[in-house]
Image 1 (cartoon, rainbow, N blue to C red):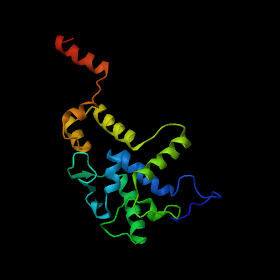
Image 2 (cartoon, rainbow, N blue to C red; image 1 turned 90 degrees about the vertical axis):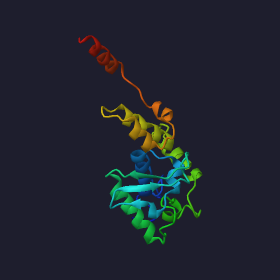
Image 3 (cartoon, rainbow, N blue to C red; image 1 turned 120 degrees about the horizontal axis):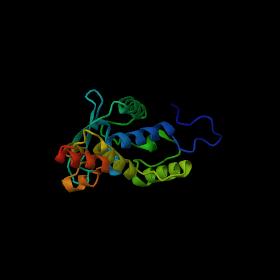
Image 4 (spheres, rainbow, N blue to C red; image 1 turned 90 degrees about the horizontal axis):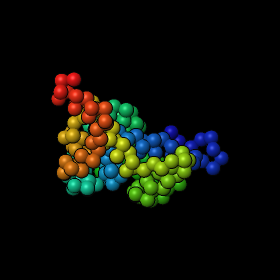
Length: 187
């Protein structure tokens, strides 16, 4: 994909669109924090084994973790890695760096302000508030809402040191409570 977005006289509203799609999908499919996203280096991604290293540097609990990659992320990350290498990125460089892929951005590394501005623009365009933290909450809530919900696995994926942090995502529907209650009396 070209550095310039096609089809708009002054360029795309959100630029480069392909890069920001990878950012959104990564946040959606991993539930990682914005700081963790910004700390991912090229060498932290292992596409062959569908996993990545979430460094201690970006983690709230200061612990490094090895996390799985959803299959839908593999082609997106493969493209991002390829584009970063084509533009001269080294294995130890920041992977999620819009500055590398856009003539509009001039910083050496991507920062939280740039991520925030993207989500502000996206929120305005869609008419609803979207943020990296909302993706994180949605991720955990959806994991805990399923029939196969596992609090300990969710805790590991979220990087929570204390299970009580993960417990806030447990919301038991009334119908499930009713079924549980009815099994007591054999009804």
